[in-house]
Length: 225
Picture 1 (tube, rainbow, N blue to C red):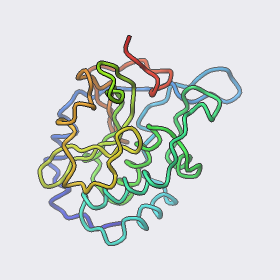
Picture 2: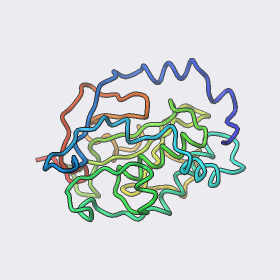
Picture 3: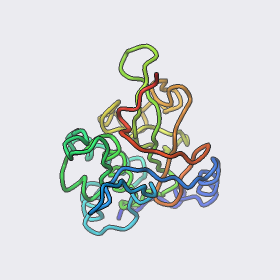
Picture 4: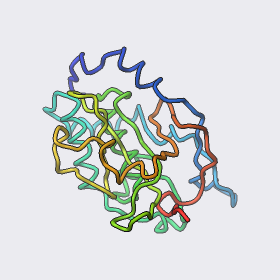
């Protein structure tokens, strides 16, 4: 595990960021229930790991020598963006199928939520404080087509020097080659939070949102009418 400086683990900031937004009990229907034709509605927090020794070893290897949270987050984002090949869930025979982080890492293929959950998991296992990390699901601008939006999931990280959230996006608007300090804060990127709506956000401890939603179907295919 990397030696994250104590000031980056400030407990007052932890309380602030874990309580700034309303907490919700959020589930997502994205995995088949074995032996049935049903889809299981899973607590979204299960898709981020706080404990997993094989992935911990991966996290330690890719962040070796990185001493601060920003550098660790950069290394984890770079790793997932370069290691995981974007592959629609339809390759698994379903329109939506959220994999767990170890499954994504083993397959080396997934779509947007796979990148996000694996990136946040690796950051956590490398020692980044959990309150600095989120997986977000919501509307984003689709390419350059004015007014059209699509569903997306992406990781975000609270940058240490200025407490600005930046994206750790693996596929849709990936900027993994840009140093963390040089990234535009996500609240200044109009392609995210398009229409000022995030369905929900989560890490392994909490989920946040305006209200819990019944979520099903394919994130990447949710379009406005």
